[in-house]
Length: 561
Image 1 (cartoon, rainbow, N blue to C red):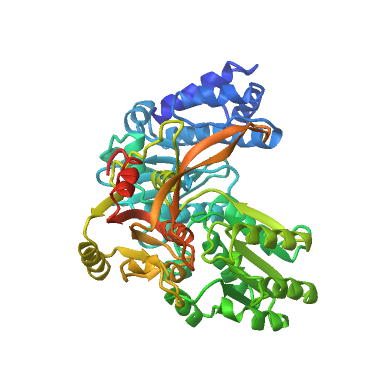
Image 2: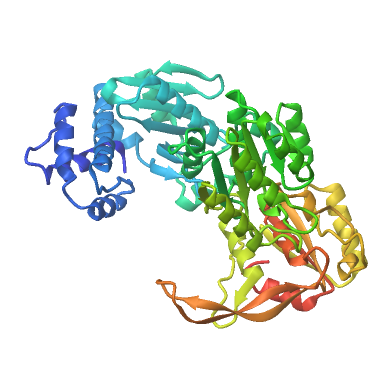
């Protein structure tokens, strides 16, 4: 819907609820008066009504939200009134402002744009703000440029705050801001060669990997802060930097792909630049990215230096332990006890731990151990945060991994469409051929082969797997665009059950599944497999070697393979 028609539509809709009829010539204060009256209608009606005309005006349930909705309504109407004041007639507005997306959100990450239209020659992004100063306008346009700069076409950026008469254009190439020239803005609208794209087509323009950065694999982007944090992650950052209840212990829990490591390193970076003494303990050997970060001022130590670091806790304002589910508490190592003792003894030091109970690699590491750490840390007063939304992998990949680990036998499998073939299943009936293929892919392409650690003490069946690529312990916390994972006779499916619960949490029966199992080894193969497969953020190859039954079962999880 074009700007003029939508503006008229809003006024007609709000007038139908207001006691005073509102005309286009009335001042903004009168607009707000009528719009406030519309808030009396229920939330669902607002959302439903405006969704039908492709504008996601939000419904309201309280006064705070009401103010927000009034702002959305009134700012758009006053924006159109401004364009009319600039000489853009209803005819021009109707002809040249159609096919904008209102409130478009990038899939997975949820970044929203007020008004955006895509074109063959350039794109147009317009931000509408109420009671927003120039500094916030400029910050918003810079943020928009970060997300839209990856598109093939140049984008023109405009910010309008009609109520305070602030109108600016941002040049993404130079980083300069200028006051909007009305005639130039009109020309940009008229001369754009509009691309008529469906929502699905627009979604394909945005490659999620451009916004999801690994501190280890995209180190330069991380140092330049060219990455995305969602609203929940930002709230966690704000709380840890300024605790509301003076907490000094913080726990961040999340599954693979939820952004734990990026969040941890982002917090560390902010603290360092604020003058705090910060050390990060990594739950494995250090990787190349971490060694590079060390040259940039980061204090990062491997897990084997945990106890010596804790003994020197007074030297640090913050001790951060990433992948803390790998802390051990057995006859040889007392790492959990050492951490808890350090927390108790050093009241001036703050501690941040992150963990994922599913990412364990040895028999001494388990979800139970991770939960034990969580419980003990909580009893000491830890503020706990939970990350749930997955950003690293796309929805198809997430569904495939879930199905691969277990798929139902008492109901149809929800197959992955895989229309872009981001997931590929390859079969080799000859181990030598598979060996050659994997080595060539690792040596000559941008694919990464992720393999399995073998015991240093005994001969195991996993030893037959090709010696190629990185093993699970080397890729902890890392991410790769393209991942290849070999599977052979060490993997097989077997039947099993899980409790079926109702909404109240009561057990009402059993669900039957086929579970992916693995042979016994010093380092549990199934845990290493999960670690490896959750490193992929874009494309995945499963290379099945001399295991036809496994190959067929995996293929059955996909519509296209």
